[in-house]
Image (tube, rainbow, N blue to C red; front, side, top):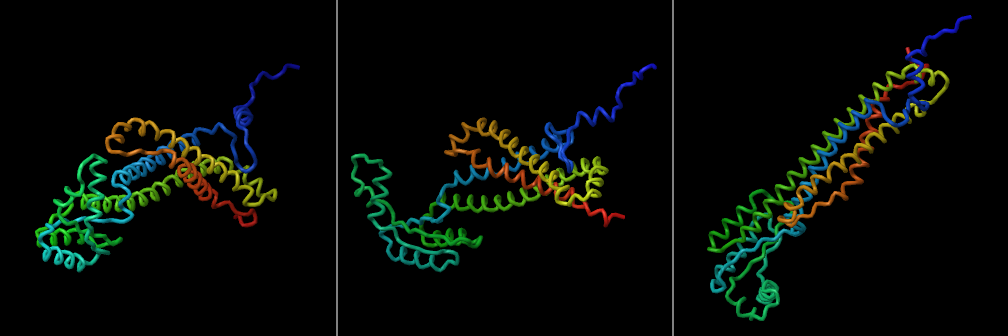
Length: 300
């Protein structure tokens, strides 16, 4: 009897080369769909990481003064009436928490610190400095507070520290950018969850008969969904780690720029947020993809 020389069917060979666990879990390496989804999610997470790195650098550049925002106004010490009027008018501005006159002792101590310990008479130098009025701003405050301070200083022939006002304005801009960054992060997270959801949905449809058979055999819904959720979680966490790796070349490339601005960007602080955030997004996408898995008795 002549033996058949036919090769094993394509379906059989694919089944042998694709090892799966119950519920749809496919052992690494992932298939093409998973790899593409991982790459897309990694790029999206990398974009989010760049946004927060930029905010980190901006906050370092502005400085820690944001915790207690203060502005200094200078007036001639000989103009005592103008000095008293200046303080009174500044206190009347809505959005100012406190106004105080900086003492001569504080001015002398600042002068000694500024001279860097040189053998110079700081007291004689400080006598020639104008009187300094320290203005503490409320937080939050109105958008017109800084303009009102400028107007009061100009009316009293006083000079205002414009560098400090520019830093305050930069802090306000950073606050607005931070709100936009959170909005962009949420939008991108939703988009990433949909990408993971579509990827796992295609895998779920390809294994519909397998899933249906498991449900007919009495498998609980959570038992069928759990492997898909784990796959989405692993896919998202892997994308987060890949995004973190891709972030480092940019940090190294901008090292000179950071040094010039006295900024030290740290990628390590974003490691856990990227991995955890990616895992949450992946798990959410898997839950969306498997939302229609129902009990056999409810199937039509």
